Image (cartoon, rainbow, N blue to C red; front, top):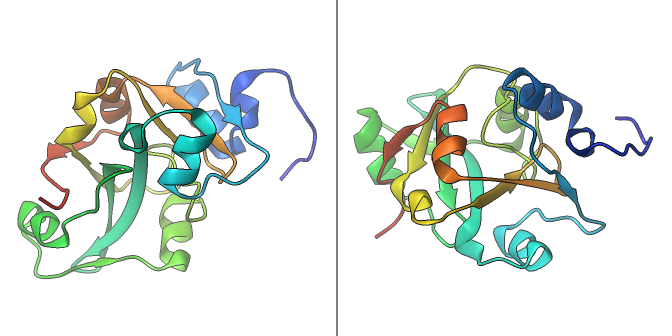
Length: 165
């Protein structure tokens, strides 16, 4: 990873994610923080928004196949609801190695799109209750804002009820 500073927005993002933004024609401000924003609470505090306005990009396996679940930072994923949605026998949280192999990013910096592999993506409906949401831009130190409808569309996500009741 380059240690050079740059003055234009998307270059603050992880290079793979910056390339994904470029390919999608998205010009979004990427904010970098000196402290890591690995958790939704850390990101919300750094941005100055509600924790529910943070998008967590979580990786699970459904019958061994990776799946990305996008949920707001105040919620937990209901694995049983995800299992039912996918018609899978078993859904489990992916380990750090599988997260990196699937997305190309480390836990704490996984963006909602721009992944290494084409993976099924589910987005919880509650994300649509916000005007703007914030998601990781490929590193634990970077985030970007986007209207949730746009974020869900760029992630090619299926809208579902994925959070715990």
